[in-house]
Amino acid sequence: MNRGPGFDQLPGFGHLTGRSADPADPAESAGAAGSGPPGSARREVAAGAVHLPGWLDLAEQRRLVTACREWATGPVPIRHTRLPRGGVMSVQTVCIGWHWQPYRYTRTAEDVNGCRVAPFPEWLARLGRRALVEAYQDPTAGDGYAPDTALINFYDGEARLGMHQDKDERSDAPVVSLSLGDRCVFRFGNTETRTRPYTDVELASGDLFVFGGPSRFAYHGVTRVYPGTGDPATGMAGGRLNITMRMTGLAG
Ligand SMILES: O=C(O)CCC(=O)C(=O)O
Ligand SMILES: [Fe+2]
Image (cartoon, rainbow, N blue to C red; front, side, top):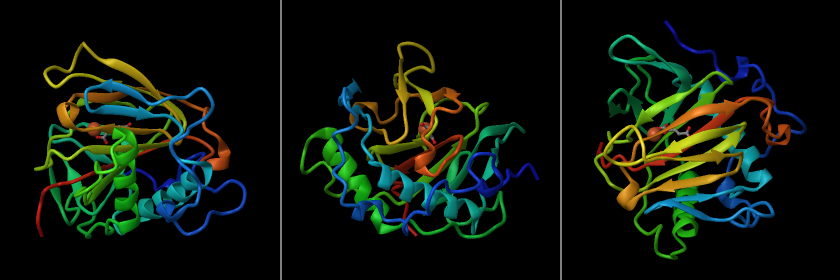
């Protein structure tokens, strides 16, 4: 059925390295986020598109990896999404809150196993609000932000994500993106075309990238992943995870 293996079977992501992490609640973590590693700095890549390197501390990263591993097992398992014209995405994806399949959101995953996806947890919504406050350096930026879906993508060393817009949401609220594991090249473009002008941004484990406002519907993609560049202390021995939280604007 072209369904990808669960994360447990993926090389490098099958086991937590070191001691196992606590139950997932990064929002409750005491660690001070936002400072990033020495030399890193907040960067506004385009109007409304902000990169905060090293935003998540190691404990938060470990907890998110643990949560992603659980979501990958079900009730709807992670899989390579099938495209309407017969192609299969190289990335593997699992969704929470709402299930995305090209090109709509539903509560149940009719293209996988018909089950309802796992709920979107409140701790993740809180993390999303904190992300907006810190990315936009505005204490009110998270007010009213109620993300209700997240797409969790797993990239092996060969996986790529072509230039696309996140436009199946009926809301123009920002997208909050968190990266874990191997580094990648994230290409952030413009709202008009899949091509130039764009900016290539290297995203590393713990990085936050927010795109909202004039950049909310900009084309973006992942052009390459650098295998073996993640820190096994995150709990990932290989591969890259990306979590994008969104507001669908859907009811029900
Ligand atoms: O993996 C990433 O950094 C981007 C993911 C993305 O664009 C998506 O899931 O729509
Ligand atoms: Fe996207």
